[in-house]
Image (cartoon, rainbow, N blue to C red; front, side, top):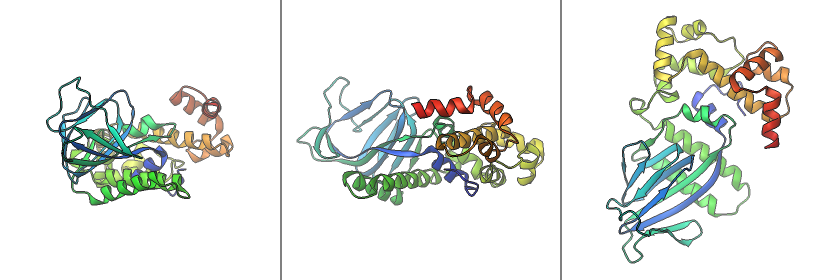
Length: 305
């Protein structure tokens, strides 16, 4: 749940994404090998602990991953991972499961040249598309021991059936996402939340938006918070974040509203007040215009699903 105290935009976005554990595995490879995945539409992450391999994601240049590298793709559809010298297309290359969550790729008799930790998760947020759009499409960082340690902890927790396992995994996933996102160099990020937070003046406005969606936010007020003229603030915000300031405010308010609606324990008037609307009717009209259905219909359809 996002509250008024969630003034850190990055933390509030990750919390609202609601990452849920899915798959975690330890993969080793030797010789020539290739793994191909299609139409996944799920977050994918990988930490290299030994060797070198090739990762090719649709519509992106191939990445060479080396020991110590970490890569996160918040939403991946098609990708291949392979040895630097991959086998020909069509060659059989099924992974061999050698133990629970442990897989071997490539020629059985070849010496092990690559070891990596691979994971998938899901984002349970009803507004996952909006939130993912605020993040970089691909995050690739080098020499980040903390990320590898977190992935090792996720792997160990996945394999053990200990008390509070799911809660621990959710917290570890949140930590992994935050650590990966704040490891990105702002100059390498495309327009979005990270670019906005890297700008000290825009960061002041973004923190104000996330600190209290109920506040009477306006372009003029946010420009004042950022110590900029209205026109300069508007242009810079749109350039760095990728959307106009009040479009961002409305989208964030609606993401928080969806989360509150699905909790099912607040009256419509309370939800309206928490996201900056003076009355349930004003909130209902804004929600219907933004989402396409009324707040009540949205909550009912999601609970039924």
